Image (spheres, helix red, strand yellow):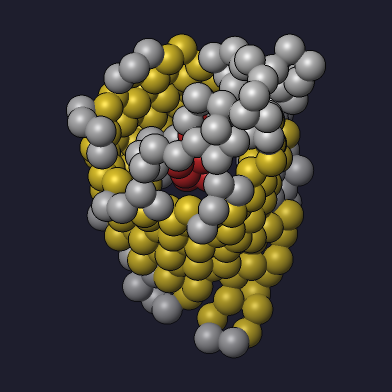
Length: 262
């Protein structure tokens, strides 16, 4: 969920006006950034002989969390998203390693998440609806071992040129095994972000996630998320989360690098 939110939040960064190819379409919305200045282009910045191929975003990095017993867990994540027009498809995965001090306890491949979504956008409001599935590729020690179905909604409201409010909500239909009746659960994040500079976006949020296991507390945390764009293609994200109950990691730091191709 945090990888998905990070990708969406990057679209909220307000860049200073730039038109590198001098075609009259700002770089942030120009889908054909190499068109010639003397060509007639459409609202996407594409000339009649150019074809928009969509946007591919790749994001990878690690989450490092620690609980009050000094046990640390490292998750290596990758996230791939391809968007064409108002549709996109997303694939993500995590590899988990738990350790105490320098001693590794376990290393397991995480579940795969595959989803497709549709964007509805206006000048101040963006809504995205997703449907997807969790493919149970994780070991039973780190996952349920069953496939899930989920749907999610993301709403972003720009309240100024630099500030936004956002809400992410996901409902998961948990797959059941012959031995365990897993619960359906919901996840949400609500927060606000601000573009501190044309390249630096920062946001605070409250995050909640239920559990498929009965008699288990939900995950609750407050988060401080930052993204920095080094260029139109290359960016980095860092997130700090502070757990609010015993089931949540006391501290979690996430650092990721991303690249966009269009």
